[in-house]
Length: 86
Image (cartoon, rainbow, N blue to C red; front, side):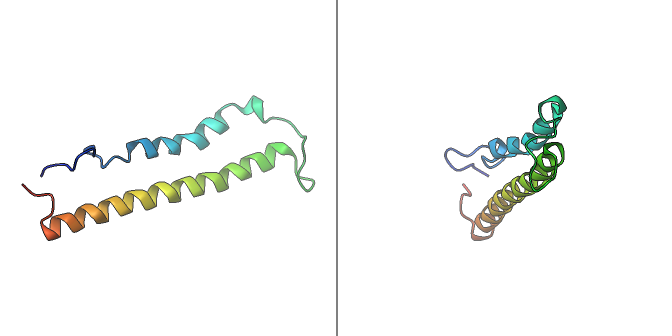
C-alpha cells in the first residue's frame, strides 16, 4: 500500500511517542527535587513534585494513546474504502 505524502511508515506519530520519556527523565535526577520547600498544603516538595508527575504522565499517555488510536482508525477506514490503494 502506498503511503500518503508526508507520512512515515509509523503514521508520523513517532515524534509524539518521545513525550513518553519526559516523566522518566524528570524523575531520574532525584537531587533536583530532593528538598522540603516549597511545601504545598503542608506536603513537602519531594512528594508533591512526584505526584504532579504522575498526573502529567497520565495526561501524556492519554494524549499519545488518542493520537495513535485516531491514526489507526483513519488507516483502517482507508483500507475499507479502498482509499490510498494503487
